[in-house]
Image 1 (cartoon, rainbow, N blue to C red):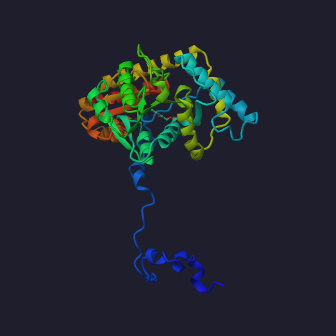
Image 2 (cartoon, rainbow, N blue to C red):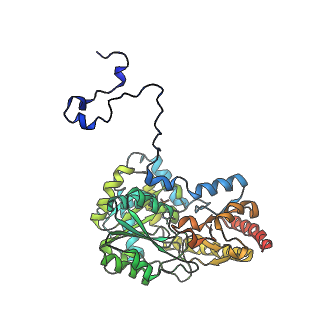
Image 3 (cartoon, rainbow, N blue to C red):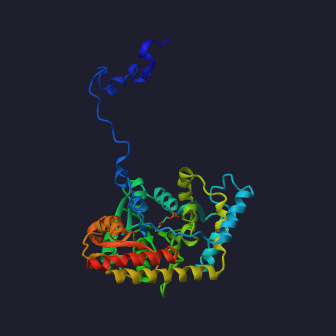
Length: 426
Ligand SMILES: Cc1ncc(COP(=O)(O)O)c(C=O)c1O
């Protein structure tokens, strides 16, 4: 029978074993009143650089000051009614339990049809598609599945913030190719230098957030050639595939000769159907790579968004007019914002894709984009995010600022009028 405080001490099996001598550090029991040793920080070291996101900070600032939030990239309208109705029907029609692990069959089939219809890709919906909790989970699951600690992942900075965190979670190492203002072209020498014997993945994002760059076929071929040379896997985030403007063409990496068998393609319903809160994403690629991502995904979320999945299938099957009018409407919004930013005194890099514009605040006298973003709500009643936070080397984009234009026209007109106040600063 246990006596007094002995019940607080778990029995120590080592005490009675020969190994006990080795493992028992001290025979002196800690006494009440002894100094308490400093506690280990709660968060593991590899995640400490990722504790807050600039989006949360700027959104809080915009809410506090009543500024128009062009910082975070979410639309301020709902997606097409036909998709919302399909979700509602699924909820009321009893599709509220766990969907199958790889995703509901109608959505996997619709993803395969979409890839065939727009890009001529043959995708097997059963073995080559995985539905995920947004593109974010697709990227995390893929990186965690493919990378051993110490493996290297080539990325293109400025980079979407979840990439660096996923790479860190895997214990992998981020190797950076910097895309530089104003055209954000890939420097071939820098690209080659980023690859090495430990390169496991090259993580592409086209169209590219935050720059609005659409990677050219030649750039993607150069990346693909290096991936083959180093036997690396290409993970390509194409969530903005339908937001491409002017004469720019979105080239899916998986369509390039010799790359289909080493490419994982990621996309999401959030951007295409203006339902960012649904978090329905997917990936597709060779069965072996998809199975690897599935093995990790089943222990991250297992499944998600059951009734929303058939609704996204309805969206993917919408006619060409839906996709054409999405791009046309956003192109008009882009032009409106660019005109306003230029009139306010910014230099602007015209984006060929996504719904972001990068502007240089240096002509307005701001060498530091972070400082401008902290003051912009007070100066002009508008919020934006500094591009430097997307860089390993903040100096590469010191005075650059990103604005989102996926907002209603009246909101953009108001924002542009407010930004006009900056012109008096010059
Ligand atoms: C490049 C890029 N990838 C992924 C995501 C996240 O997609 P999801 O909301 O589907 O996880 C975003 C969202 O802003 C993005 O810009």
